[in-house]
Picture 1 (cartoon, chains in turn brown, cyan):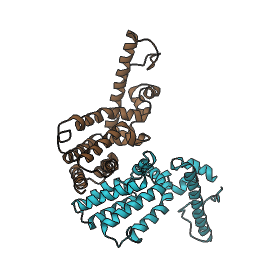
Picture 2: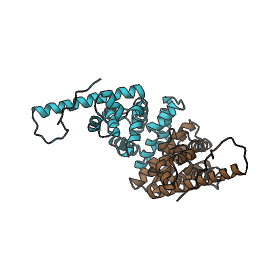
Picture 3: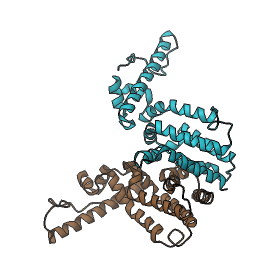
Picture 4: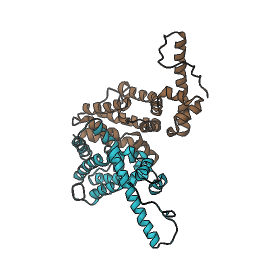
Length: 210
Length: 210
């Protein structure tokens, strides 16, 4: 596969006045970015997330390594860009989607359902999420992780867990970390249903045992 | 600092018949290993665990990089060697030490106490444990992690948690991972007592809520 070559002088954020040329450059840049993301997804599908390096992506897409760095900043930035669509879809489900994952069900039901949904999500995207976790400096403070933690905290509060719900959300959220779940499934052959069932036991006991 | 130079031909496991010379080589090798571990501890104390690389250790100890690799195999092996003393001491406490961390107290009391002890341990050695986690391929299957997981599982069983105690131990153990706890303390300024209190809440609810 090949990409539209970046035209000389087409620097993102360069101070030129907008005009038809600048507009067309922006379109090219957006398209190049999408094509790079496609190539990155292909690498992940073929060889796993650990195989996705800036070098390999540049080679696959037939562009210079500098172009890849200009588009994504770093390997972590590339991972985040790849994940962001899947994360946004998942966030949409728990914030605005139908119950019991979305609003409208009792908080314990929502906790149980969102954990089960997260487990399925991780089994689909977790290889990428795990690699992204490993390549950012502070994986707990990236926006999707913060939003997810806050969501668990809110559900715990609504369910009446008033003793330090922020820390309790962090402790419970740790049980749904991609690395842990992928290890349970991949190395120990644990069925996804068993993971969801243990999550149900865990949050039911935490909410009910106060 | 400098080390006893490795004598030419003194290969560990070389097939020569044991004798006074081989005996003396083994003593030198053990001493060199201890001196390398001392140098490694100094680097960690001065600059943190992430600064401990095979290159830097070789430079600090005044030996070739090959010597460092021969002694420890890899950076992960070096981290494990550094941690093993501290891990062994901690294992001794929960397996053979006085109650409530050691045997003799009721299982829930032991769960609460061993979690609090683990939190203190992580605040002392966790920087090293975190770096070791990041440098081994499968951090969940190294012997100290397996022993720790089995210990939590056994306490849960004794406390009457019969629904999948293996997975429940894995979920609860995730709340005591070095990376998570060091982030809570280092980035969010959470007091260690709050961590221990949340652990107490968590295991009390899990054990009591069945």
